[in-house]
Length: 116
Image 1 (tube, rainbow, N blue to C red):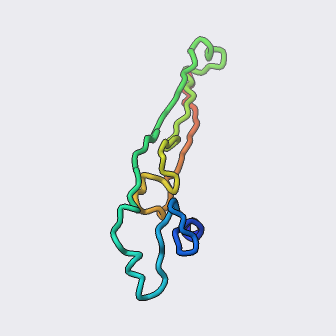
Image 2: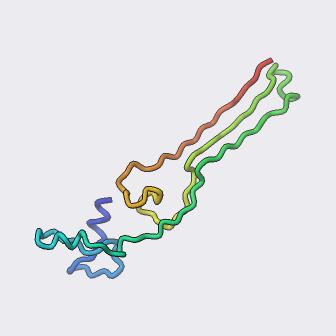
Image 3: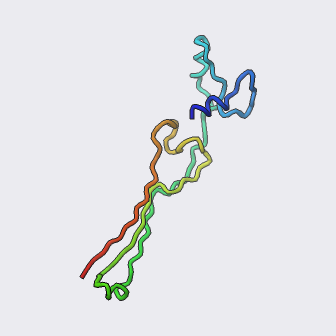
């Protein structure tokens, strides 16, 4: 993230009108320029996220009779599997705190078995 600040900002030597970040001041008498309120920092925070899903399948008792199994259910579940957003710098759900720990994707698989 810090490399993006260094590589893509407006400066006197690189007057890129489409730079990702505005001009930064490093001199002590100009440092207040970095703290000015500006619409530059506003971004579209709309997103669509698949928060959780579980898929399962129960095998028929007739199929399981020979194995002396009463029931068998196979399943897979997941959390935070998909996020659609135009904002790509960090997880959009973190808002303005891009340095926070990212949201985890979790996938579980399992089986529920009942034996006669």
